[in-house]
Amino acid sequence: MGNPQRTGSFMPKFSSVSSKQGGDGCNRCVVLCLGLLNVVLLIVAVVLGVNCAKVKAGSLHISHPAVTQLFSELDFLQSNHSDVIEAEEEAKKALERAIKNHEEIKVKIEQLKNISDGYQKQVEALRTVKTNLQSNISTLEGSCGSCLPGWILFNSSCYFFSSTESSTVKKNWHYSRADCVRRGSDLVVIDDQEEQTFVSNTIKRLKTNPHQWTNGFWVGLTDIATVGTWVWINNVTEVEQRYWMDGEPNVEEENCVIVIYSPTNPWKTRFDGSCQNHQLDWICELPSR
Picture 1 (cartoon, rainbow, N blue to C red):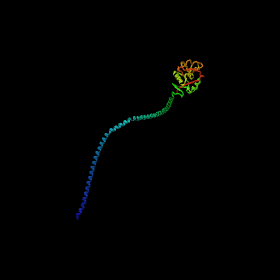
Picture 2 (tube, helix red, strand yellow):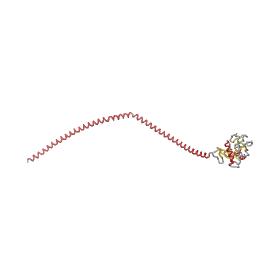
Picture 3 (tube, helix red, strand yellow):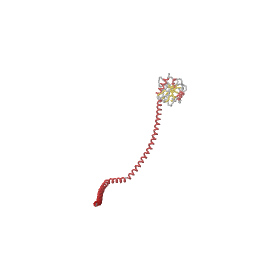
Picture 4 (cartoon, rainbow, N blue to C red):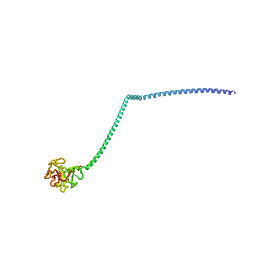
């Protein structure tokens, strides 16, 4: 009975001692671990600090020339800032001048366009005038060198022989000339041998008895103003004597000239006649159109 109680009292005492010894051991382990951890952290911090210093020193060593270049360029830009500003101002002025010149050119172009339009209108007007002139020229060319119906063209003149219109109508010299004037012409003026031949041959063709004076034609030659001085109606004095027939002129009162055809001598075709009393055919002359 006595042993069980001692045993029971001994066990609690042993447990208490064991618990106390175990708690102290754990604390020492914790403290030791913490100390080791602090040492490790200190070492890591030192290593990191050294490395950071190396990295920083290397970084500064590497970047220092670039920074220096940047500052140099900045100084250069600042030193040239005034030049840049001046160049900018010059550029602005040049731009303004260019704009002004552009506007002036636009104005000149507009003026030139107006002038060109005016010239174009003038060209069109001239083309119209040219077309009209060409049309008129064509018309004139069509009628140039021609004579009115019933007239005969020779060289540059037209001739009207009254017998071609009527074989019965006869007139004295004054009425014959009046008829020519009414037709826009006058009595013929024979200027040269060629015209003399033409008149003589035409009379031969028109008359059955062309050499008879009664079949003759009045021409524009008289001595009405001064007897013996024979003057054409264009105020040209006739000095050629070979065209008179033999013995002509022969009567002072016969002051107008008649022409016929002469079969013996084509040059001797003229004789004088009475301007008032003789009734004959007549020859008119006018320039061709």
